Length: 319
Image 1 (cartoon, helix red, strand yellow):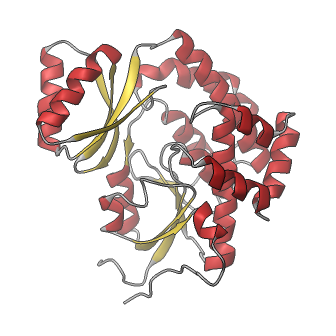
Image 2 (image 1 turned 180 degrees about the vertical axis):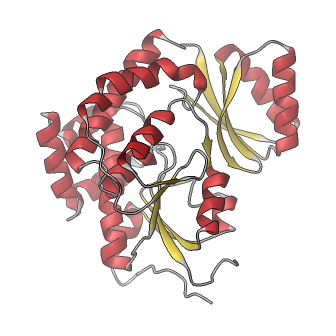
């Protein structure tokens, strides 16, 4: 199927990245869809989320994660109300799985808020004691064969590594020990690649099985997972998730399995999806080449919604 043919639509919730605070704050304070969600969150959390977010530091604090979650849910409502999006599928790479769980009804908004806060706390506790020397590197312009050469050198040197994200044919995230990171960055640059950023805490590695077990025992044991109202495509292998138990396992496996975005894209295309709505602050999943090559992308972010309605964005007409 060629991009642009009539087909299904997928609602996509992006993985989390740093947010532009002034823009986010304006959206949070004025938007008609996000305000009721903030009220729900405040009741669940027992504190004022906006005040905590204003005072917090760090791109991935508990409060930043919660704000990101609520922003994405509100923006999905705008996608439906303002742009007429009627999605037949849902996908949520990385952090986006949490938002997807609420959107498809596997968890209520209040349960998704509680879960997100609890997971953030468990992660902070876990990485304060375990794997303190592990970081996740993000890099582009590194084709698969070059990645193989880099991994072969690390293996020869006896260095630990784990590929955390496969984002495109030349775009990866690699978890390594911090002392190894400068050498990996050097190897990436020597092959014409570009190191984008270093993430701490790290993510998506089989080494974090202890974190998965902790979340399963102390957080997920308190939740009930309903069957999703529309199918969810796994960001880990592209398989279709249609049960509450499947959603539970998807969320837990995110701690220990790599994100494979090309597999999710291939699965969506095989199921006739031609339009991808990306609801949330996004600088990656709606822009990476494997997405734009395959879908008509409808980005719905805070900036989109804050524009006057006269500057209306809409999906491109199908050929």
